[in-house]
Image (cartoon, rainbow, N blue to C red):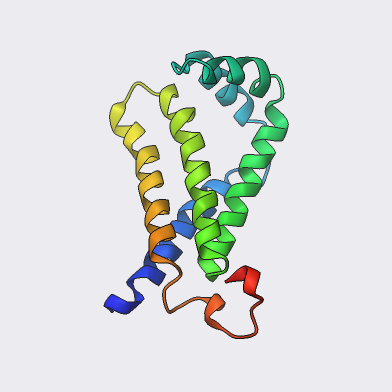
Length: 145
C-alpha cells in the first residue's frame, strides 16, 4: 500500500481539480462578479492594480484560461501523464486562487482550503506519478512522462 500512496494521492488531487473545472464547463458567466469583487478587495499592492485594470475588464479570457488549466491539470493527474508538469500547473492555479479568491472571504478557515491546494500540488511535484500511472508504459511519448 505504501508504494501506491503517491498514485492515490495524485488521483485525489486530480479529482479536486476536476471538481473545480466541472463547475465551469456549462459556462463561466458566474465568474464575472467573483473576478470583479476579488479585484476590488485584493490587498496586495501591484496585484490589486493589475486585477482592477487588466483582469476584471477582460474577465472572460481569464475565466476560460482558469477553466482550461483546471481541466488539463485534472485529466493529466488522474491519468498519470506529465505528472510533475501537471503538478506545476496545479500549483500555479492554486497560487492564483490564493492570491485572488482567498481574499474575497473574511472567513480565514475557508482561506486555508486555497492554501492547502498549494501544498498538495507541491507534494505531487515532489512525489511524482507513483506506480499506477499511464506514464509508466513504454508506448507513452517522453514528453508525457
